[in-house]
Image 1 (spheres, rainbow, N blue to C red):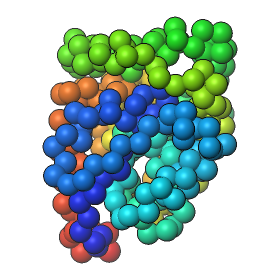
Image 2 (cartoon, helix red, strand yellow; image 1 turned 60 degrees about the horizontal axis):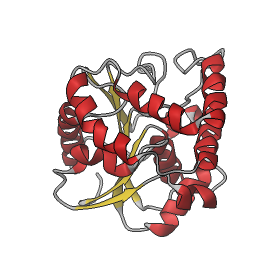
Image 3 (cartoon, rainbow, N blue to C red; image 1 turned 90 degrees about the horizontal axis):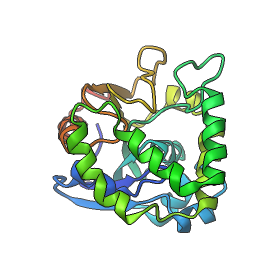
Length: 249
């Protein structure tokens, strides 16, 4: 059983401010802390592990930690540190490993990933915008997601090209399969049924017994307004059930 906790810490992803997840956490009844993988954080950290430890230093209070995409890996590293700050983990469009390998066929093909890395180095703004479109491709409400994404596209990336490149290095090097398979803190992993950035790994990988995996059928990589509502229902049920002794005994 997890002690009652009404604080939520939200970590954004590669090139995506945490505030872009606002439709998902706007109905949270308690305190919400948003953290972006911005220049301030990225410049201080050399790895996903260091980013997780840095956030634990900044936010030691007991909280549920939620991360989107690359942010999910940061949250998992924070949970693995075992400080007691992380009440539970909620990952959105997360992954144990991003790039495919001989024993991980659900990841992005290595050739495609290397091409994207070269593109970001050459023209970061163009490839950042390309990624923003990829996030909503295939969504069950693509028109609604496109409208919701438009103001963020108009604001621009807001992250230096150097730190965009560093984030891609983290994605390319990251392999948390062992961590996800032994994680002891309660975790909810929400996957998009229409995600064209991260292929579903649900049937090919077994998380720890403390984890639950749920598919959001119409969600692409980014949880637009309608998918965010479906995600929040899962999150609400998850955090409610954490207080039931039998669930995580």
